[in-house]
Image 1 (cartoon, helix red, strand yellow):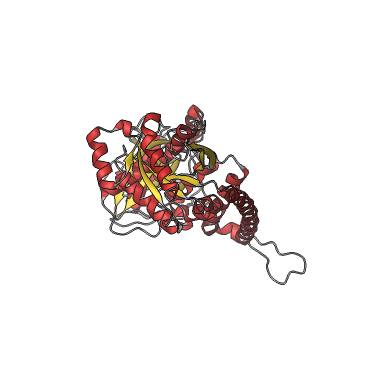
Image 2 (tube, rainbow, N blue to C red):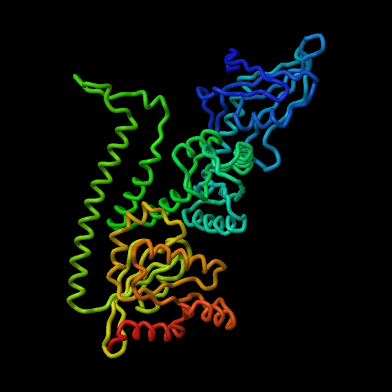
Length: 487
C-alpha cells in the first residue's frame, strides 16, 4: 500500500512464504524508505517472523504489518514494526505493541516524515564524522579459507590506503561462483543487514566483478559496489601527480569501465536520431561507449608521445655509457626508502601501499669514479589489473633498458614468498625475466639473526635494512660487481 492509502500490488503466497517483486518504481535510499507499507495476514496469530523483519530491512518498507485473521474470518490483532536510525548494532527495528484493529490510531504521515528526518540526520552525521567511506570487505572463494584470509588482509590494506574505513570483513567459501550475485542470495541478505547495523555505504569485493554482477549486487543491497581492480585504480588516481601518471591512470580506468558500462533500460530506450537520419540513432549506451573509445585513442596517442620522449632521453643516456639500475618489487617493500638511503635523496616515503606512483631517477656514485642511474618504479601487486599494466607501458618500458634489477621484498612479512612469486610472474609476463637481477630482503631490522640466515640460505639472497645505511655495504658491493663484472 502506498502513502496515499492506495493498494499498489497484491501477492498470493503458499505455506512456504510470499515472493515479493516489481518494486522498482518505488526507490529507497539510506535516508528514505520505499514509500510502501507491506500488509500481510497471519493465520495463527503468530508474532512478526524473521522473514517479515528481513523484508522490512532489505526492502526498506515504511512499515511491515501482520494482520491476524480470526477463525471467523474477521481481523484480530495488528502487529507492526519499523526501522530505526543506526545507533547500535543490536537494534535495527522497533516492534510495536500488538493492538486490536479497532484500537489502531496512528498518524501515519506525521510518523513516517519524522522517522525519515531522523534517518537523514543519522546518515548525514555519519558522513560528516570523518568524510571517509565506510566499507564491508567481501571475499568469495573456491580455494582454501586460509588463502582467502591472506588476500583479504591485503585488500584491507588497500582499502586503508585508499582512505576507506573498513568496518568488517566477510569471507564465504563456495563450490562455484554465482553468475549473478557472486555469492548466495542468503549471504547477500546477511550483508545488507550488516551494512545497516554498521552504517556501511560501500561494498568492496576481493575479486574482479562483471558489470552485470555489480548492478545486481548494488540493486539487491542499495549500496555502492566496487571490486579489487577498481579499488587499485582509485588508489592510483589519488596518487597520480605528474601529467604522465594522470594519463596512464585515466587510460586504465577507461579500459576497465568500457566492458562494464551498464545502464538501466529506460536510458537505453532514449534515441538521438538527427533530422533525416536513416535509423533511430545511437542509444545513450552506444554514445558513452563511442566517447570512451575516442578518449582511449586520444590518451594512447599521448602515451605514444611520452614514449618517444623517453626513447630520446634513453638514447642520450646510452651515449654517456652510464649503466641503468632499477628498483622493483612488491608494493610497500621499501624501494623509495632504499633509493633515499643509497643516493641521500628525499623521495616521498610512506608506510602504505602504492605510496610511490611516478617513477623517480637519481644518480648513484661508486668508488673509482663510477656512476649509475638508479630508478624507483611503481610497486607490483598480486593479480595486477591488466589494464593497469598496459596503461603503464611507458613507465615499465624503462625496465627494459636496465642493466640490473634490484628485486626488493619485505623479509619481515608473513607472505614474502607469495610476493616474490607475484613479482616474478609479472616480470615473465612483461618479458623482463631475462634481465640480471639481485634478490634483496628488506626490513631485516625486524628479524632475528637466525631468521635472516634461514631466509638467505633458502632464497639465495641477501638481507638489508634500508633505514640503516651501515647494512647496505654488501648490497652496493654486489651491485658494483654485477654491473662491471667484465671490467
